[in-house]
Structure formats: C-alpha cells, structure tokens
Length: 151
Image (cartoon, rainbow, N blue to C red; front, top):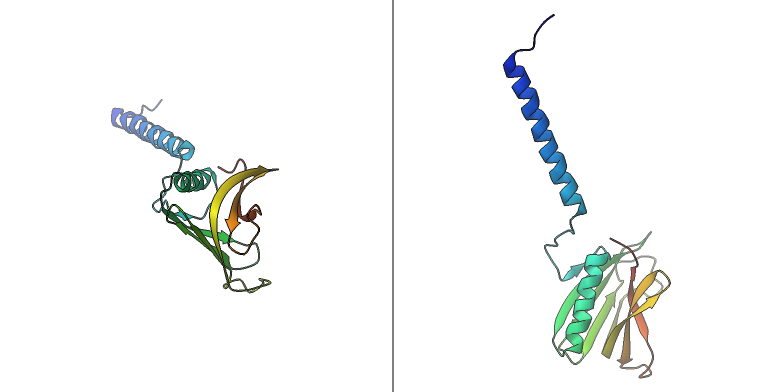
C-alpha cells in the first residue's frame, strides 16, 4: 500500500479550508442587501429602491428637498427616465419617454405638484402625486410603481 506524503495531506486540508471560507463568504454576500454606489438612482425597483423612495416621500413631508432619477425599462422599448426633485414645498416630476420608439406620445411630461404618497395595490406599491397644476386638487396621478416582494 502506498502512503500519501505528509505534505500532500497538509495541502489537501489547507485547500479544503480555503474552499470552505470562500463558500461561506459567498453565501454571506448573497444574503446581504446590496450597497448602492448611487443611492439617488433607482433602477432595480426592489426593496432597497422602495425604501429610498419612501425616504424621499418622508423628506418632502418634513419640508426637506430631495432629488432622484429613476430609470424604468420597458419590455420591448427604450427607457422611461423619471426625474424627481423638490424643494420641500413643490414637487417636479418629469417623465421622459423620448427614447422609447414605441411610446404613444414621445417626449417629456412634467408634473408640478404639492403632495406625494405611496398607495398599496394588489401586488404593487404605487407612487401617487396629487394637488398638481392642471389637474383637480384631489386627483391622484400614478407615476411609478414597485412590485411587492421584490428583493
């Protein structure tokens, strides 16, 4: 019977240890919420982005300014670009679908409003604007939505 040299046994144990540590780190990072380099850019429409949107709504309610850019991709079209900024009193929400060749009305639409909220619907959270120029004071305009349960 041939014996395995001691050095080979040490190498095998060390390699197994390293693989175990790397697998553990991979599992740990998979369960960890992703840190975003640009918290004012919403692209995933997941829980982290929903939390950031809730923060923006709360800041407006506290009379504090904020700004966000949201990129929403269609299934068979170009992106809808949403620019949201406010001074704590008035909201400017601009929807730019000029890069969408399939858009019914390609161009930019700006909503100037004095209220914003988050409404719950079946499977979605909707961002709603109200008290907007050119609309009835109590009319709610849904500008974007987030799927429930999106991690």
